[in-house]
Image 1 (tube, one colour):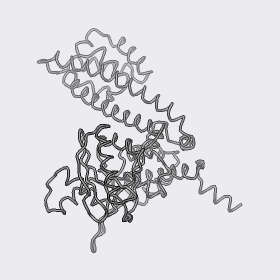
Image 2 (cartoon, rainbow, N blue to C red; image 1 turned 180 degrees about the vertical axis):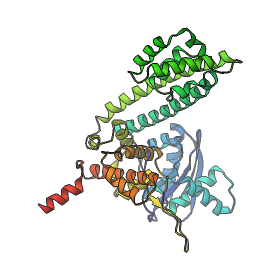
Image 3 (cartoon, rainbow, N blue to C red; image 1 turned 90 degrees about the vertical axis):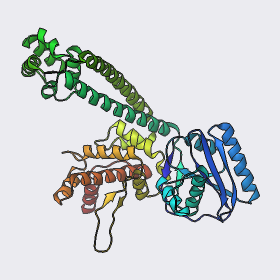
Length: 419
């Protein structure tokens, strides 16, 4: 799985072969040129080993014929179809880079004043962008860090699936027993799941006494629910107005959703267990885990998404990688608001945001700093984003300097000086 390192524009040596590849699911298109713009060939090749070998043979021949010393090969940073090619090229003497798809689209329009798309045109546009130095280097995470990225992405997909299941369940059960959600408000809780599976229709409550139902819900909820909720459920079930046409079809779907939820929750638990085992083997994790408010799943996602901390020279680079770097649009007398770019690893950005929420709670390591920002009038969302940026800087500094986390570091430093 690829990891991009954002760097500024840079100058390319004259004896560098430029190769642009337009990635496809079954077939890739390549354009080979020099820094001076001389076309040395173009070809389509299959997304398999035989195709890769034909492609590499064409590159090697072009390099020999043009007397070039280095190869700079670029592609758009979209999808996963290009990953097999990337891993094949890791063993070759070639520098892999990526270009922003938005840059490709804009440059394509400029080239011939038309958005016309073709494989050769796209690959040629990629070479034009590379010549301008507008590219980002590619680093492929290895070992346990690569595993953490895969597992974190798997968990993220499963969590999205689980949310979709809950939404479907809430929608369908609203047709059978619409009053239920006003009594047991959280359909995700264990008590709600138990009642939905054992008493799926209002009629099923007709055979129960208040004492029996109260005893059940009190046991399942560990005392959170009791007689009050039992009486409310029985009363609501007695007077419930629900859809009767197609009733059994709805009930059938609810049962299937409950089965899917059980399987998905079990799968998530397995993935999380594997994440924790893998994380324990990553040296960087030990000190990061000492930051109060960060859990194993959070740390695993951060390490997996960044991949290789040593590939970043400054905190600005790693913030840009996460899409947490700032920008504003100002012109003349107008001064625009400051926003984050959101051009980067979306899962890393999301993970840091939710991790920051834990650190700003009362007693959290960033609560005082967060409160100062709020007191100055900064909106809560922007204050949380500021905490996300700060948290990323702390994590990066710990790994970069091979240091440990010290709570209230600045206050400790001042006390030492005073002493």
